[in-house]
Image 1: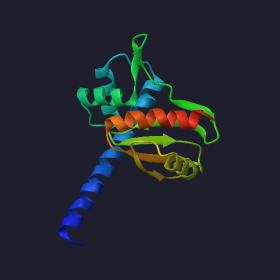
Image 2: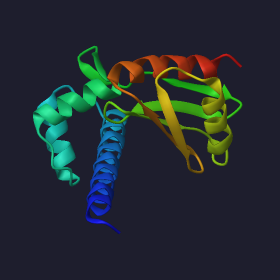
Image 3: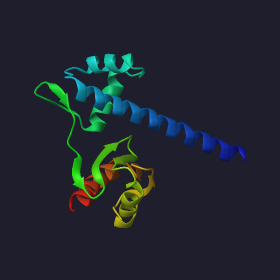
Length: 159
């Protein structure tokens, strides 16, 4: 492999690792908020650090914004972005950075759901990668991410 190709490969691997760290942190935030009432960001920072996430108040603030988590009656609350009666099972969407939407569905349905996304020609979506129950949906930019998320919700809730 050439040096340029190796550098690009390492950059891609680093980016994928950072995305996975962020996804794990987002999952932890959602689990914490679902399990107990959290009223302050510094409390969430302390709880995340306790389980091994190296975070700051600023990073947690960005994560809350990306996840669409808001305060309801003085405590943080998860947004409802799930349609449990979809053909693909319980479908939910999350974001990871400005260029990625993560879709979760019933086990075994991700490939079919990704094919549906690919054939829908949603503006801003540049491609999908499907696992068993999770799809990474790459988008061009933050504006494209917001528009794609809305279109995906419409696509999977019109059944």
